[in-house]
Length: 535
Image 1 (tube, rainbow, N blue to C red):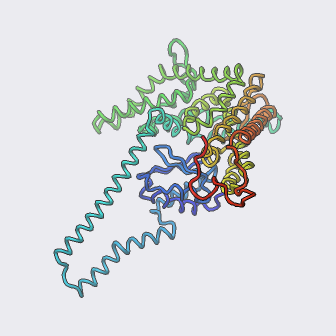
Image 2: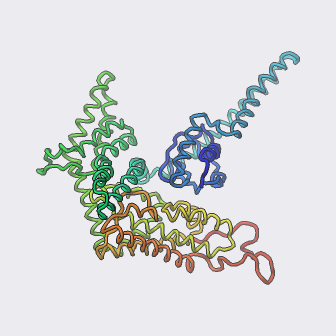
Image 3: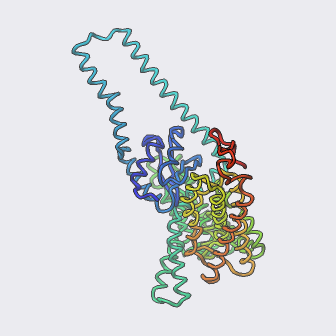
């Protein structure tokens, strides 16, 4: 656990290339997300060795340091403070800076003053040699800068596929909303529990209002973030998206049907804000400055607003309804099979970054039904991961380094933070990643089976999973829902453990590092390159 976020931030900053190499700073629930000018200046191994760092992930547009929930916010604030101060927060940084100044500036000036009083003038040959040295240094610096830019461009090109670009933008729009979704979801759960127990009847209406207010206006926040992500004016994006939730739209008729406030939900807000951004950019490129101030905002709201009312809200409403119907049908009709597939495939989706496509689907379901039935099923993937890591811990008794990693990462895994176990344990070993997926599939099938039998398990917010999801559970009574969800977790743990213990590790894994008869290291354990991990 990170006790001093300022010390952690100070340790991270020089390892990512210093203040000049950091172009942007943000964070999600578990990761510090950095934009870097030159990726080659990052010391990956040293970053992983910083106390409290659970792993590092590169996602094309950002370099991500996994720190864990709660901690990441404090470290990010300290990191931003260091950047604002020019990175002068550590003694090492100051020493390095003083050394550079002494060599390049102060030292040069003092030497120059002394030489002027006692030494002859510099000869042309010496002057030429000095110029050549400076030019060589400059050429070397330019070459390194060009090389870094080329590496960054190649890496960006590899990750800039249309699908990954869209998913990254979707994540950047919705991820900042997750803290509010979590807070409002927990308040909604408390209000529901008090209502069921018939406790504090005077307080429950206030709690309901608090939990529902954000969801009633979430379209405005989606529009604001969408416009910012696509290069428009955020407040105009929010203004255009606000029409989706305005009560007065009930008086508007589209395609012969009266619109309903909130129709289309976050999908309609997303589409309206994207359209508004393109209208705004079109106007700014063509209108002179004197007219731009008045006409650009007006045309943005008018054109995109009317199209949202008469086209986008209706279309997005149909899509949102189809998503809700499909999710309900999937679990009530083919629950066990659907849970098996969803729970088994979620870890690979996380590894590839494709799970971001599910964020607007979860949000749409929460808007429509008050909870998402997909999240508890997908959370079973984390249970399979925990079970697999426990099996590796038991089998590889003599690998103290790996066991230390597992001990530090298991608490986070139990609370639904899976990156440390994915990138630190199961994925590098190969087979345990696959057996973790088997455990997730079993847990998903368990929850899906009960959905077929009429016990629906949902979550009132997105973000947490594992044991952290219990306060957000909703469905057919909290006790029954919690029992089914807890049973799914235990199933995922057990199957992930057994599959990994018996099939997830190569023959001979966990044997002593010395042959008992010869008392010498076995060939596979002798110093030197290790054989490749089985895949």
